[in-house]
Amino acid sequence: MKIAVAGMGYVGLANAVLLAQAHDVVVRDTVGEKVDVLGSGLITSS
Image (cartoon, rainbow, N blue to C red; front, side, top):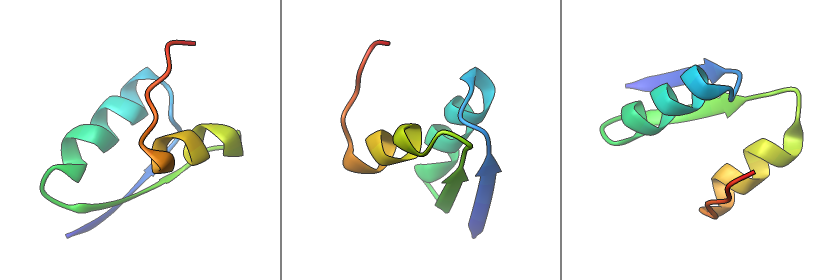
């Protein structure tokens, strides 16, 4: 299944990560750097 998640706040990011375990997920956010970091696989605590 293909799923789109709008927003990478606490709820959007958590849902995207969980859904990505079994589905194709696309994430959109107004801050492009957040999406780039998620796509690169880096984990930061900021």
